[in-house]
Image (cartoon, rainbow, N blue to C red; front, side, top):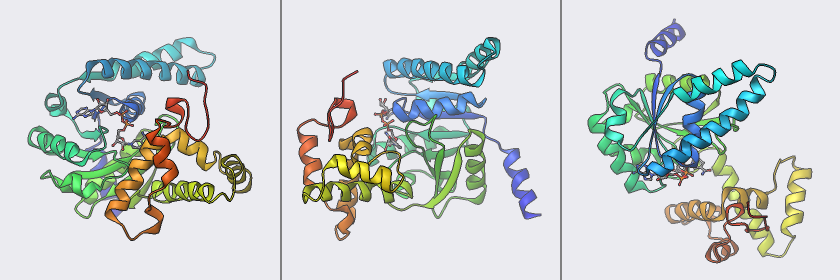
Length: 304
Ligand code: NAI
């Protein structure tokens, strides 16, 4: 009976209109997966140029998917592309965009006060039923939600880059998140083709809590001169079955991003040895070697 009750409740309130705030790397990916699964999506950014770029990159990515999905049927492929693109709207006005929203997913700059300010503004104008979510990687969801009067309708929805490819969605509950809200976003996650996992509001949630200290330990191993970066990567790929080694992964994620995350945690949890600063990482960032995006990190890359 309980199960039926939950199902009927959630179905009643299924999410149709999604607003994604921030049209950068993550926001455009989140918007894409929602649009390609038939939801109406509005992407909001401060910058119209970012929005145009987001729409263009979604179009390119969807073309690739359409070709794969409908190999022998160009009519169906074209329809998939145009239907999906028709679901995407762009806006530079967040307050107006959330008017008709069921779910707001925030993927803006990783700064607590900026996220809080955004949600405070939106809380005053969004419909009562609208669920708010943050895609933050390293900030406590509870602290972001603090700026709103809808903590029961607040969650973390942590996606992975590249969003259209990575299957996982971490759903973060704060103590105030209601069962209805939780069930609704779990269902939404499935509806956009993601496998959901649930985690409490703890630093790094599941994936980054394990992955970031692991990558930092790899750098410490290198710093001690125990092994080369290349050999550590080879070891983890061939010995542990990881698809990428820790240095390849650091370069892919961006050394600045990793440094930012570990520093935030070190400040909050100074006693935890796993979160201690890593000098090599700091040096590379200072030298502007941020990984693949700058052409050099632990490895060198051909610039595109
Ligand atoms: P990004 O820098 O590519 O995009 C952020 C966008 O937000 C920019 O286009 C910027 O113009 C816009 N923006 C900034 N302040 C705004 C505001 N007040 N209103 C509207 N738009 C605003 O950043 P990225 O990588 O997409 O990250 C966004 C969020 O997602 C961050 O919280 C990050 O921690 C999180 N995240 C990032 C992952 C990654 O691999 N890059 C993975 C998972 C989460």
